[in-house]
Amino acid sequence: MTARWPLLIMLVPLALVCLPFWPGHMNADALAQIGQVRGDYPLNNHHAPLLMAVWKPFYELGMGPGWLLTVQVAGFLAGCYLVLRSVFGRLPASLIAGAITLWPSVYGVLGGLGRDTWFTALLVLTFGLVVRAAQREGRERTVWIVLAIVAAWFALAARQNAAAAIVLALAVLVGLLLPRRRVLGGLIGGALLTVALMATQVGAGAALSVDDVAPEQVLYVYDLGALSVRDHENHFPPDVVRDRSPEAVTTRWNPNSVVGLMWASNAAIPNTPLSGAPLEHLSQAWRREIRDEPLEYLDVRWDLLARNLGLSGPTQWVYHPVIDANAWGYRPSFPDADQAAKDYVEAFTINGVRLDGGIVHRIWLYLLVALLAAAALLWRGRRTIPLVAVAALGLTALTHQAGLFFGTPQNGYRLELNVTVAALLAAAVAIGALARRRAS
Image 1: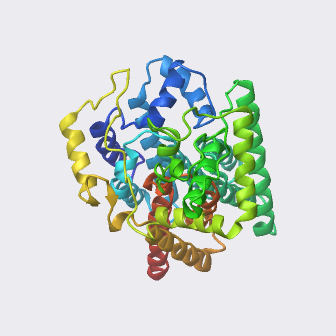
Image 2: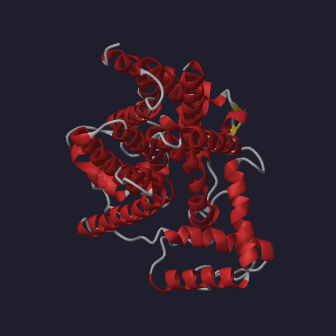
């Protein structure tokens, strides 16, 4: 089969995502980043400033949000295809990649612009390029290795907690270059390479004069809010929350986000982002409460992770259903197709108003599938580097939780999209490897 058939096949899911959602569903965060790309206000490090800096010259050439949507979906499809080629031929790899793209708990999030989707697409693309590097030799392998490192750099730029997953891709990549002791050497080398790439991003941020708005303060506010509600005591510093009553926090508290504390019209902390002395006092209060109540703090973090995993109830806000109000006239270009796509996604929810996810959105199920598939691939294919790479992708479903456990201040399905995708890909490859072994 010629190479053009897989490409033509994958154009179908590309169109089925991009056309209905065009120019892409956008929440407040996405619109804020577009404002930075437009130059309406400076780049800041709350979201993904390096990706915005890369997009900016293309935006000025006329490549607006719809074209970014196309790039993100095309990159996702390409990554899925390359991962699946570890065991499948071109035709089945392209068909399965399309099926994963159209899977209801993937499809809706792929239609929205945002760094969580960018991270997932770049993560899968990184692993796909690692798989392809493992399948090649000589100069061609070098090209694929360089491309994998570039994709990893962009993935690290998408989210602050991306390293917990990307490190495994880079570990496999380094291990590919080692003649012996690939596991230990790969892990050490992958960690060092991850740190090196992150260091270049710090330098790039400084060169671009990216504003430091201390995004970690959102985490401080979440944890202090949760601990304040549990103790019925206001743990915030006086220059952060001037009303010292517990009710100043408890009446605005939402265990799924900090909007009520930071960004609502009657927010307890009205002047955000904080800087100077209030920010330092907030940081000190956070560290003090962790030191004084370590078990309570860990319980707060576990409660939030359990909600994200769907262990303590349905996952929430499984996709962003609209383009938020904006000053630039962005709205769905094909309203009827957009509504049909939304109807498809919401058919798998259990509460159309709150967009609570159904069984296909339960992250703990995908986590379990990813780990089982990774174990099967490592057990049966541990000497086959492409299968080891796919197993590592499955394991990112677990390592990713470490980044969320300590670093997320909210609950939302999009934070775990990469787990769903890793599970689907690892399971497909594990089944394909088993079928091929039995056939031989």
